[in-house]
Amino acid sequence: MTFGCKILHPYKLLEMNFIKEILESEKRLAIPIMTHPGIEALGKIVKEAVCSGEIHYEAIKYLVDKYDTFAGTAIMDLTVEAEAFGTKINMPDEEVPSVIGRLVSDLESVEALAVPNLSAGRIPEYIKANKLAAENIKNKPILSGCIGPYSLAGRLYDMSEIMVAIYIDPDTINILLQKCTDFLISYCKALKQTGTAGVIMAEPAAGLLSNEDCMEYSTKYVKQIVDAVQDETFAVILHNCGNTGQCNDAMIQSGANALHFGNKIDMAEVLRVCPENIVVSGNLDPVGIFKQADKEEVAKATNELLNISKGYKNFVISSGCDLPPHVSTENIDAFFDTVKAFNNQ
Amino acid sequence: MNPILEKIFECVEFGKINLAANFPPQMKGQPGADEYTKEALDSGITPSDIMNEALIPAMNKVGQKFTENKIFVPQMLLSAKAMNAAMEHLKPFFKSGEVKRKGTFILGTVFGDLHDIGKNLVGMMVEGAGWEVIDLGIDVKTEKFVETLQQHPNAIVGISALLTTTMVNMEPVIKAIKEMSPATKVIVGGAPLSQEFASSIGADGYGKDPQASIQWLDSVVA
Image (cartoon, rainbow over all chains, first blue to last red; front, side):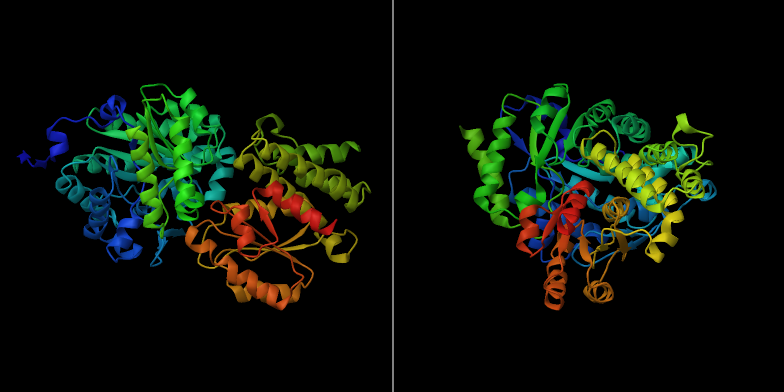
């Protein structure tokens, strides 16, 4: 069914509100951030999935069909936006790509940097994957993915260098951050147009900052994106797995209506400080638990987190970051089985 | 403490690199670690005293503040840059043997992995703690670790990884090092690692953060 030229998928036609549904749910919902298990189940390699919208979509679909996840999630690829700006990318077969070198290094190069359009690099393939998922996955919301402004700026300027430059050359970094933000607003608007229910914005590098610096060099810009795209039909889920607790207030101040935390944080404390109208999600260790532990340990850790979060209607149980490649099906099953048993109690 | 050494300590602690640096704001227009170290040497303070009474204690304090979440990565990197500015003046004395280091630390990000911020932090902090650091960079092949160790047979080796797919590459590197030199100690670190994983691949130490790495290194040579 179409309205004008925009295709709306059934989730939206039913006027479902992703955040409202979570807050009103009687059971504990689960949304682990995962696409690698889907890529592997399809017999594909990571390189194929990050280059092909069709394979990317098939991986999302496989996982939402197989598991009782409340939402499907797109690949957490923190290079696609930097590549659009012109950064060189290393693309191994079995791992998400990584950035090579730096694109800008001073005021002159930052001022000369052009904000790319949405036809650059692999952006069209990512938009295609989200569009296919939103159109074809009828029963569950789909969450797009993008990088956060400070983490993107770090990939363009060099991560170590930007950490120092925010103190010794803040004006240049603010110009760079605004360019990153302008691009991310345009990208998130395009993702919203595909009909997904929201975007998980990964901003881990901001977790290496103090709360004050996080406010100044991340939150201020994240808020611009939130203000531009977030409404009742589209949520911004701010993910910061670098935050060990010092940046909680900066994350809350972003205005994002959902916050996603990494495994280094005390989730009980996060739930205590976050307002009830903000969805809080996290934070089982994607490596130490999902990948390296056995199914009994996964069940134990899941149960512990479910019990810690008991009584908080705004909590969604999740992994602390995206699941890495080669997590066993047994462990993913153990996670979902434990959530199911908890909800049946 | 000598007033100039106190100044060097303060510059390193707060990341004041040199006179031209506009950070920290409260020290703007003042000399930095660069100028004060030169002044200290010119006034006859020994390089060992600069190292042992100012630089090492200052970086130790920085590491402690980082561990306690009182400062974060940017402040730590600025302190390390200030320390590097001071160390430039001391390099001739290291070469001549006038100033002794605690040991040599060969450091690199394991092959297949291009991430370096954690490795850089550890390298700078370990150097500030009085070690000679040989930074092999990123995507370091097993052969490169072994070859460098042959040139510095008493060194300790540090291997970093950020990815779950590359952390497994640490094991063959450790195996090759131990086959060539069973007594060589190896420490590993990186976001996805744990003490359990480090032990399982045959590493002697696990660096949870830069300060923990320094404490382990110091304990090996104590």
